[in-house]
Image 1 (cartoon, rainbow, N blue to C red):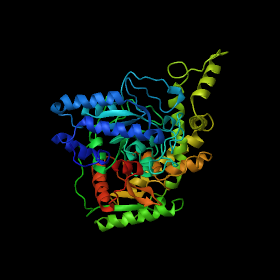
Image 2 (cartoon, helix red, strand yellow):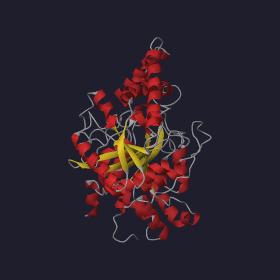
Image 3 (cartoon, rainbow, N blue to C red):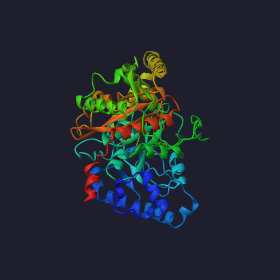
Image 4 (cartoon, one colour):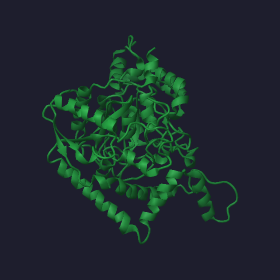
Length: 492
């Protein structure tokens, strides 16, 4: 076995080595996470559905046979965001609309990980249809932050981030439309990577905004993020927007930052960023500089317009994508007698969708409506182009850009639910990356008042290897090794 090591503290790369050497079994590792879920998830609510029996059987089967088959991910226990369809396992998108939806196929990203040998523990909670920044918009109740159960874990992949931070999953898979991997990773003190748009298949990812959505890993370390990404990337004939990644993903090893040029984004470190977050961020950047990075100032002149542009474009795409949930083809149909089909549509969509989803559908429908399309949607697309050009210009002078991941630490449950605009501003640092389709990663930078702060690194399209290498060096320079109280309790 793994000696005196706490299995909940193991990184995926470390666990893989132990299983490969025979010092640890997949069954023991899976059992440790299932035990932590049983003990703590009634408080955290990271999961909507745990498949304990299936997970343990898969881990047992791996120990008996799969090691000889050379499965590269060796029975690693994994949490899956409930926006990714899984054959035979209910997939709800945290919505009443899909409360009993049992898919007949599995998302390509999940299938590729399963083929590589992961053990799926269950499906994690999220903001309904991935629309939110706190995981409070779930129709099945909020997830709580493992660092402070009175606070949010971020969103929309809050359940996945909380599961990793609480020791309820070795690692997790999420999706990022405007920051939904990176922002909860920051608030939960873990690593979150949004890959370049198109580098990971979206087949089987229930669509929110199709030109923004991207699947990616939430992990304990940067090396773990690279390991999962290695098996996620690739062109998929079932997703025509997917592309072959130009480089094979490699696990980063070098820990110094000599020769790396990093630009601090001027527009993302000013007004609106909490003082505690800025203090931790500045200290972390100083450590990167001490490790050899050349740090300078960079500018994204139109970054201030990214948030309003996003909240026109993404809801417009959501309005079209969610039109399929009509009570006819699949999903919820409102009960009772209906005078006509229009009334059935109205009742089904009123009962099936939560307030935030309805808000975004209405915003998007309005932006696309006759007489307003060019004034809103057309203008927002022009802003998107300007943001892309800003990034292109910035990367002529630096290799990577850096900013805080989120403007605040985890806020209290209910604190922002009555003010949608304030909630939307939680993604002010992450949204520009999605508008441009670029890769971005959040790593833990330290604690402010006992709560995690994330540092975001952004690279040019398909620069994942460089991004991961620099993030790995930054991770070593910063030296963040704190874990949530729920993992600390497991040490005792």
